[in-house]
Length: 593
Image (cartoon, rainbow, N blue to C red; front, side):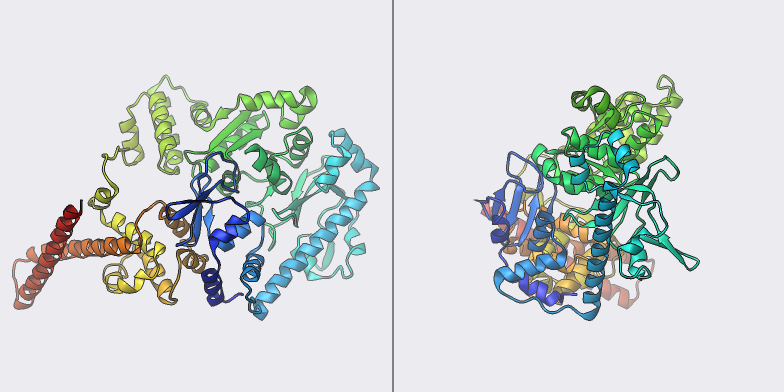
């Protein structure tokens, strides 16, 4: 494992603007730099790079991170390779890995090599298998498409891979998912099947999908979970499709391997598929970072409708107001593959052109099977909608969906909001940023504000250590634990930028929240001095609220002993000083306006 101290030193030497500028044309915009996002197609620049914080964020697709994260996402590099490339750019040597890390890295490399050798073997076997070739031709696959997706064939024998590897008893063959060991016997996992290599975004084979030729069960078989392959996180065809996704600014999601290949062959090269499992929020979030539009095109049967409903549920927690998600509901009995073969690519293009937006599919799927002419039917719709809407991030899309649900249920939007337990949408008054920062915030908002400022300027944790230990460390809420973690991490190292702190927190349970919170600071105009003033005010408010709570508790006592009276006087004096300071701050602010 690369020492964290080296990562900090590397990020302190690297200029994120230079790193990103090699791939993105950046222009100065105030304290930051702007450019067109390299992770999704856009016409107006929303990709922001902060040289001071050494952090980037796209306000279009949500991609954000440090110089290391940028290379990992843009170049498809692993963490270690990204660190090595940055180190080479600034002329420093990466420390040697520990024995454990070297062993782990060696394991990944070894498994990848085994899977690639197996894929090469399966491809060679396809050339000599007439049944497999006939099957693929019968499904309409061309030789060029089969080659592009590295399609192969596993012989219908027990141990054909024994001819490929020097030692068939190698434990890593089992670990890679290629061989099954059962009661002391070993045999190939895939036998008599058409093989579809599953590749990660860098093109490395990480697993296989396999289909039986005669329709015997299981018809489809995937690699098991391995150190390289996690079925719920990978998408078939993403490696082959990623350039078309960037070019066309959309991605089509279908159900099967053959659908992906045949749609790509028909000109829809931006097509991917989940790996024999339901689409997950991770899948949708990954695709929304790559494209402006995600189109789900599933089979036109009951199973396809069910898959579309699951995709809807997976999309709701990650969809935002700037992305579009559509659903193609094909005619009964059709699937994307059959439609293209029977009616041509134009027919599928027409279906995509009239796809239902997420909002319409949401209402349609909720209404299915319910008599909305009755109070019971409308109540059932509201009951089904509540947990789905509650998963959505607050924003304009959720507001619009709430209104549509309310309209279908013949209810007022405010009534539905109350029923769902959501805070009502309120228009903020028109006011300056300075005035808005001085608005009274509840304790949770104050602490989120503190977290945001400490993430932006980690060196400030030392100045506010007393406030953190007094007001935060004994708290039990997530934001209390987050501030405490940031304080401990930043205290252990000095001179951290926002980006360097993010790398130190990368393994935290709150890592994604830290990145999202840091991204918000790119819009803020507060520099370190303004942040110092805001933090002082926030901690003063927290202390004032704590003092008031304790004073109210003491005042409720029926008898006062000398110790209690002394405590009340001390608290009252401290409160008076805090309030005097707050008044002076307000007067000072008014004098500057």
